[in-house]
Every structure is written in C-alpha cells, then in structure tokens.
Amino acid sequence: MKPLETLYWLRFVLGIVAAIVCIGYGLATNTISMVSDFNIFMRGLAFAIIVYIISYYLIKPRLLLKVEKPQKILMTGIGIYFLSWLVFWILLYTIIATA
Image (cartoon, rainbow, N blue to C red; front, side, top):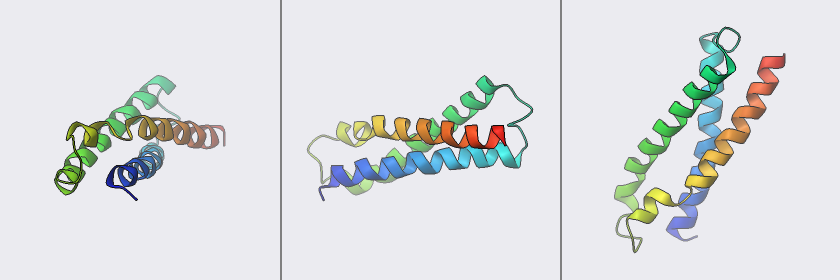
C-alpha cells in the first residue's frame, strides 16, 4: 500500500479506538448517567480532536519524505477518522446508556 493509503486506514482504526476510550472513560468516571448527553458528546469530541492532533505529530516525521505535499499528512483521513469515531461513539453510547 501507498503511505497515504496506510495513513487513511490508520486514521479509521484510531477513530474506533478513540470512541472506545471515550466511552470507557465515561464508564470509569460514571459520568454517562450523571451528565447531560450534550456534555458527554462534547467531552468525547474534544478527546477525539486531541487524539487526531497527536496522531498527526507522531506520523508526520515518518511520512514527511514519502509524500509530495506535507499538508496531505494532516488532511488524509480526517473525514473517515471523525466519521468512524462518531458512528462507534453513538453505537457504544446507545448500547451502554440504555442498559
């Protein structure tokens, strides 16, 4: 696979992992049942953004010489990352909150 294709799929997996960690944090601190849905979502979104930014700085040195434009490292996979995070966060939150 090309470096940007690998980055795309890595961001997909990171979105799923970030959603699992967000829900796990909510369960560990028992905030899923105590805080409003909007606040839980905003905390999760903030965590997802932080994970995305950290992944950029960890991946950038490895791919800098392999891509033609450095901006592609930042933008490749941003949509799939947030979409996979959102889908899995909603799925897990619905399963946990209704149980």
